[in-house]
Image 1 (cartoon, rainbow, N blue to C red):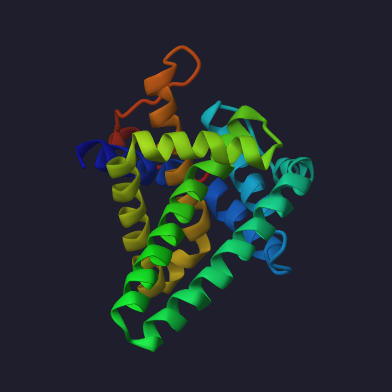
Image 2 (image 1 turned 180 degrees about the vertical axis):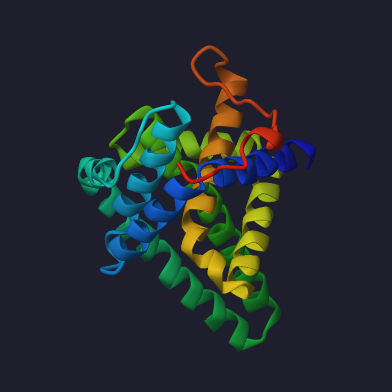
Amino acid sequence: MRHAMTVFYRSIFDTYQNLGTVLWATILWWLSILPVITLGPATAGLLYVIRQKRLGKSVRPRDYWYAFRLYLKPGVLLTLLYLLVSVPGAVYFFLLLQWGTFLTYFGAMIVLYILILWHLLLLYTMPLMVEQKLHSPALLLKRALRLVTENYLFTVNIVLYMVILTIICTVISIFIVIWAGWMAMTAYNSMMYLMSKYDEDQYAFDPEVKWGRIWRTWK
């Protein structure tokens, strides 16, 4: 719980510190996902912008579109896979609940657990794709599965914080313009925190937050 809160708090700090970038990148993301099938490439573009900012590089909208094109094929494949699992799974879950027997309730709980695990996997899949420059959905899901199974409680806590964040952004609607960027920042920081446990030389996560130096956020 403590480690998940540290990562989430750092993500709030990073989002505020890069508020201008998060704002325009999120607007591009909203525009990019209108065809739905482009959800994966759009998210890759958003994460790429976040990664470049983390490396201290200057970013422009063209960097977003560069990553969008670079990860178009694996992003679309992951989107299709997401829809093929999530939509039938959700329909089947509600159908089982409506039948109202013990066995169907039990089956519904199994389906629900599979859907939750599936979404936990996706928390790390896209950040891994951008950070490690991978284009194989199978390899990405395999590595994401390892992160989830070996850090299950951390992952569940991070997802709960993200759900709370989504509720806040829904209630305070002006936050919708940065919601996707905020979520992507949290997912990226979560992945980097976990990867730093396995390889400190290649991956680094700094939990330190100093608010006093970053009041000018529009950069």
